[in-house]
Image (cartoon, rainbow, N blue to C red; front, side):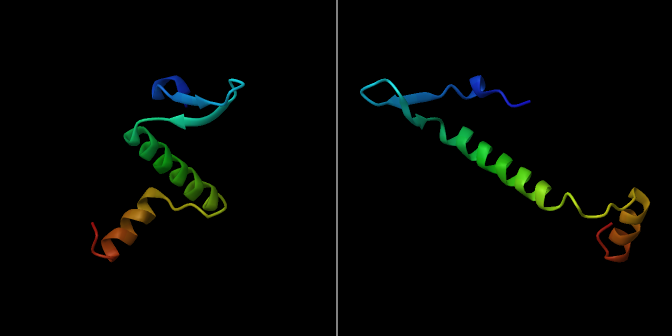
Length: 66
């Protein structure tokens, strides 16, 4: 589950106190970007068929990867 609190974000606000920008650790930002990329890939592949574990092992052996 995603928890925003773990990132200890800092906000830059305008003169009215409205949040306009965020400051966060580079490491945390890079992790978020990686997670977003993973989610995008999963969404693109959601309609692809599945392969059984046994079939995957056969393919990997055939390709010399296992």
